[in-house]
Amino acid sequence: MSRWAPVSWWSARDAVRVGAGGVLDVLHPLLVMARGLGRLAALGRAWWARTPRERKGPGLLAVAACGVGVWLLPYGPALAGLALAGAAAWYGRERGGAVQEETLGGDEVERLHTVYEALVPYFAREADPAGEPLYAYDGTWERAVVDHAFRAGRLSRLLVRYPAFFPDGEPGERLRIERVLAAKAGRGREYRFEWDEERNLLEMTALEPLPTGIPAQPFVTGPGETVLGFTDGAAVRRTVPVLTGDAREAGGAGGAGELCDVPPVVWRTGPRSTEPHLLVVGTAGAGASSLVRSVALQALRRGEVVVVDGDGGGGFSCLAGRRGVLGVESSLTGALASLEWVVRETERRLLAASRARQHGAEVPQDARSPLWVLLDRPAVLSHLARAEGRPDPQELLRVPLRHGRAAGVTVVVAEQFEAAEELTDAVLAYPRARVVLGATTGEQVFSVLGASAPTGPVPETPAGRGFARLGTGPVLRLQVPATPDPSDETARESERAAVRALLPEPVRAPGAGQAT
Ligand SMILES: Nc1ncnc2c1ncn2[C@@H]1O[C@H](COP(=O)(O)OP(=O)(O)OP(=O)(O)O)[C@@H](O)[C@H]1O
Image (cartoon, rainbow, N blue to C red; front, top):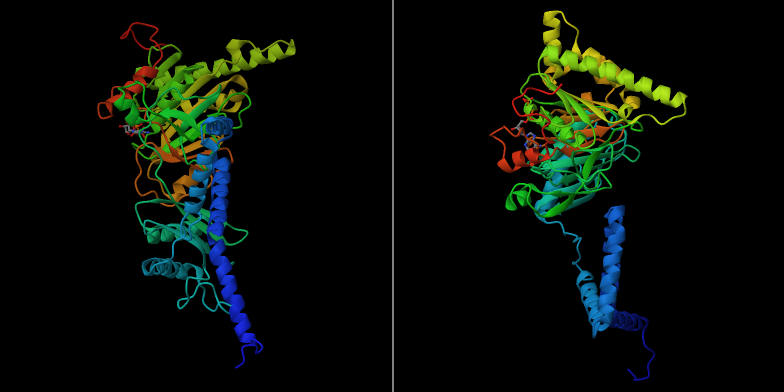
């Protein structure tokens, strides 16, 4: 063939392909850098989105200060440019990045298939009119599993599509699916389930355990705010600084320790609160008394409390005779006397507030300062009252429960599930802030909170672990701060010391009886 013969079509295409490949090879470093810069920008955006509002300003300030520092350093900008290029190259690698996409191994494919097979009995239906049903005994997981992620070889996130006929509005049906998924994804972890009823999607995410052992301490809160416990970062927009238990132990009880920011469940009380009263229901020994004690210690920072300890074993004697504690009662007679006083006090406050308003004056301080009525296990006293033919102490709660919000009176009732049916209608109806504690069933959670728990079965339930719901808000996982009775020798000494440190000063010599 002559040197000058026309080039054939195929050889021209080969030449273009080789040329394009060469150009891509030459540009490859630039492409990697561009991808890395994009990923760094995405990480920055994600950090910005998850940073609480109050920490954004200081964060920006720190970044700006670093920028000025780098600018002033000799060769600072050049070194910063090199560091950025290095970071971009690292994050731009083909399989690199903070969020590394895993190629599915055989084991992972098998796990997804197992999960799919476990769901088939619930999501498949005989004689499905759909030509190719999503779930079938001889089907495969690829169409049903929309997204998934594995961490350390275990399923950490799963998004599945379910058929439209599945009754996803029924808590019982949901619970069955959640149990199956939690079992197949691996026991020993807690999972969050989110049902997207509009798109027939169910998302399961493996959760980190909540922090346990955070001791009682003066939490950074505003007036009328009470920290019930701690929850997931994604569930609330706020964090509070706390000293962790280990840090306090390291530094000695109450000593300076390492601070860490944790997301709290904050309950707001007072005249503008939509959830002015709290109901806690727990299994025996789940930590309901500790939660009441924790609320009492926080309430005493700004108000006065009356405590009724139904079975006398809740460990509230540490509060007796302290400033702001108007009474700690465990007998039926004492409880009735205290609660009758609370009723009269609520009415007095209402009257004083109404008179002040009529005269266009400010409501006097003694008619609006916070008064807390804390009842632990009232069912015991109700039973005794019935046996002795005396009035039920719970009936006396009707007035503060109904009018307490306007009178600055907050009621907290804690009871065990076994005796929950002894709670009166008023106690069950008025408290709109609710907590369940302990190893509870889905039905128990629903009966108290009026909504299902967002997570499946809890593998291990440490004391003080449960769920909280404020009004009609979402159900939040909850870990109550460790607030033991200071005389409980089974509790950790550092935690007991932390409670002792929070007790208000005594108003009379120890042993002189209870304040009334
Ligand atoms: N949040 C918590 N962190 C650590 N330990 C806790 C927590 N809450 C409770 N405990 C411990 O669990 C035990 C039982 O707590 P508590 O007496 O508060 O439970 P309870 O539900 O009131 O039980 P009961 O009604 O049977 O007295 C105590 O030893 C207490 O120190």
